[in-house]
Image 1: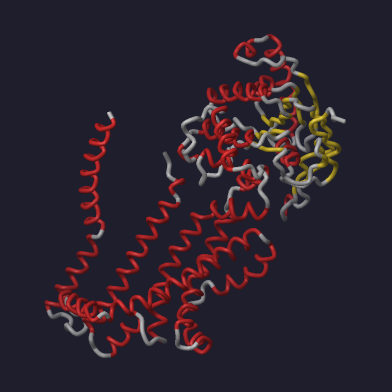
Image 2: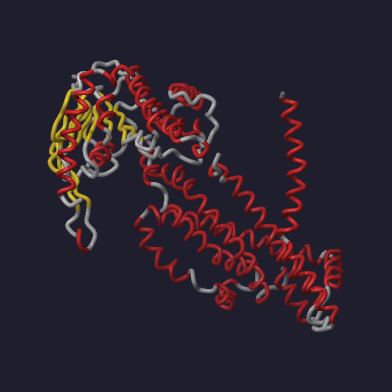
Length: 267
Length: 269
């Protein structure tokens, strides 16, 4: 039986422990969140800052333990981090003491592949993200955009079933971000996988995703789900597509509502 | 084109080394001034030559000690003790510090010990250590080990605590086990701090080497300083003191260049 879902999230709540004093009760980041992400779907999580979208991503990644509810993939319930669910962070999180090649090879070595094969696969992914020639560079010698490419290559190299992305282009300038979005969508088309992409940029979400979940203000849960229906091809012309523009406005209104609620919540 | 590049590189290098020599002289100008003042004060008769022998007398005594082999033998004894104590301290300290940072049980066990032992002057333990380990090498090595251990533990602990958690998460999501995270991620990420701690420990090792040999030893540079001083041979005593200082200085510089090579990944493009 091949299940038709990528990630199933059922009744997930999450509270961060409070410190003494004002916030002694802790902060409820997620409340009774349900979400079904389809197999090989490019899914964007959108919401105001502090709505718990990163928390949800870290729970799927297994980096923080599930407190209530359950999260499962085709491999079963999520209990710990694993190479079937690899992640790209906003601040790249490359290993600064390793070269680009060594960074990309790391996950392959953990899989126990022979060294020559690790090298070949790593090289291929470095080429895929257009970093050929920078194999021996250290992350500190690269620009932000190049570092993020390296981080994406490192994650894609292990060929995860599920690709988690935590505002991966948030630290990049506008032009680089646009280029990276197109490249990511292209790579995803060539190598379909289930992608969960966290962002607070409405146009980024519409441009990249097949479906978008809009989260409520804290405590977060899924407030709206929208099929973008923009088709598999995304490029320069998508940006002027009538549907793209309309969706952008519609989703912006929905996100704004939540952002206003969040600010009224005294955050 | 390649040959042209080579030439221009060589030209820059030639100028570069001249600049480097000048910079070196300027940098150590205070040392040269101190030596000059030293010599002048001695000659002026303000202080007796007994108490502050001239540079020339010290240099002569140094050559004598070198020729008799006394200096080399004792320096070898001292430095091998320091190296053993320091080496053990780095190995144990790094392990304890990293485990304290990553395993709560270790933290609970070792934290109070570290807090109490760190500020305590290790030379205060010399009489006690003499009773425990006798007059041989073991007592000196133990003291050096103990003195060097704490800066290494503290730096490894702080370094490991300060590791960017997203790097650790990245590694686990790429399939690294808990042990692999410690060895392959936290250790290299904490290395800048650990090496800074080792550099402090290196200085401590020289201090403890001399002070322990001064009190309990039949050989070594510390012993030599003590016995020459007791015998009133001040030029020779100063020669040994200056040998210790310059050996310590050279060791620190060598360690410094090892560090910058090891941490070359930190350099910005």
